[in-house]
Length: 353
Image (cartoon, rainbow, N blue to C red):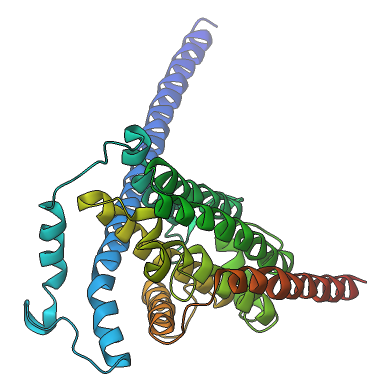
């Protein structure tokens, strides 16, 4: 009779020790998984940041070489093989230029403004998936986050123009405010059809939805055209570079900038081109989807094609007047966006019924 309670106590103690050991192992395993996920996220973050900045630097050389072919002239061909080291030479030149701040400017705003456009563009890359599972921040409002960052980028150009206290810079800043805010409206409207078809604002979910059906460039061709035109206006590239038209405004909003501050505007422009190209690929051309090759390579190849399109358009089309630019937006892009929204909504409702 006395042995049974002892055996029971020993069994309870053994079970408790086993439970404690199992809990310790589970905790260690969970901690290892958390650390592994943290390292993977850090690796993806650094990888995306390095690749984006490298592409932005390489685009300086690539744009000059491609434009030289389009315009039948020589491009950079002296510094390094095929002029590849021209980017490095330009970087050193900008770094050693005098970093002048006009005495009549608002110094604090003048200094901060160039970094805003670069930071907002880089932050937008956090939610863009470059391959399955390769995304820094996989959130359900990814597309809204990108549009929000695009809206904040307006402040960079507007503040640069205002803080310079120069007439040319101020006019460039005012043009930028009107142009970018107007075309953001059409950019947002053009994407409603994509969101309606995919049923999500998550960019990874939008790519996966295209895997189950077709690339959205086919059912959403009007939205694609509107988004592409709005992308040119948002990046302030020729033919939509009215905010820095040298024939009218010297250099527009960055007339008073020099040195590395001017370099930040330049790098921010190339990062914005890469961002818009990556968004077009993600929303309309299936992101990383494609046969044979790894998803990352497909994503980079598709993005590179649209970057090339941005450069070819710059060397091909003339700059319109400012009133023509705004008329194109409100009289052309707005009706097209609403028409696309109406047709997409009618099709979705008809299928559901």
